[in-house]
Amino acid sequence: MRTDRTFTMLKPDSVEKGNIGAIVDKINAAGFRIVAMKLTHMTSQDAQEFYAVHSERPFYGELVEYMTRGPVVAAILEKDNAVADFRTLIGATNPADAAEGTIRKLYAASMGENAVHGSDSDENAAIEGAFHFSGREMF
Ligand code: IDP
Ligand code: MG
Image 1 (cartoon, protein in one colour):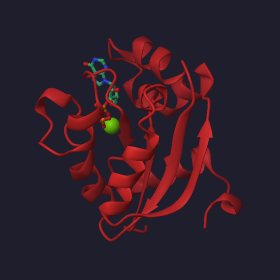
Image 2 (image 1 turned 180 degrees about the vertical axis):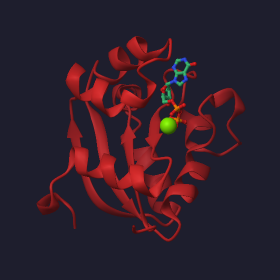
Image 3 (image 1 turned 90 degrees about the horizontal axis):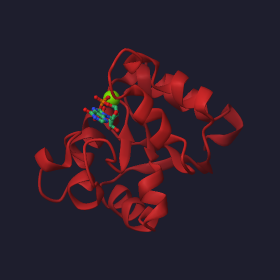
Image 4 (image 1 turned 60 degrees about the horizontal axis):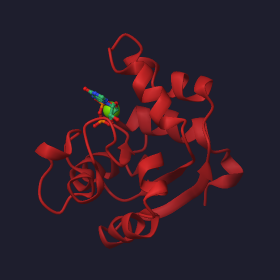
């Protein structure tokens, strides 16, 4: 299992607010190489599958609505220790708890609308990257 890649989405609120460029700048400045990137609009079935681990949580329906209301920027990022370093860069799930300077502190509105996704393990990074990209779209 490789440890130098993670998967991210700039969520619909980031796209709506015109924050794609600013967030990609932060990602580049933190030393991540972009391996794959595209705008994509998930169907409800896509979002239900992507977030299946949360299907029993009370916010699942709201989460699927949010993640399908417009396109996201999906990307695979490469750097040593990618998963943990990217989680540090994005900050806590709830922007109120996120450290100063993190992407969620800067750009997230709330716990639900929190600007970005970051994989939580090397295994999930591989699964989530393959969910969105074919081998021919990774560079
Ligand atoms: P993470 O994105 O920081 O890994 P998770 O606990 O995996 O956080 O939750 C996945 C996503 O579900 C969050 O990023 C957020 O968009 C949403 N979410 C999590 N907890 C809540 C909540 O209590 N209310 C509404 N949405 C939530
Ligand atoms: Mg998570």
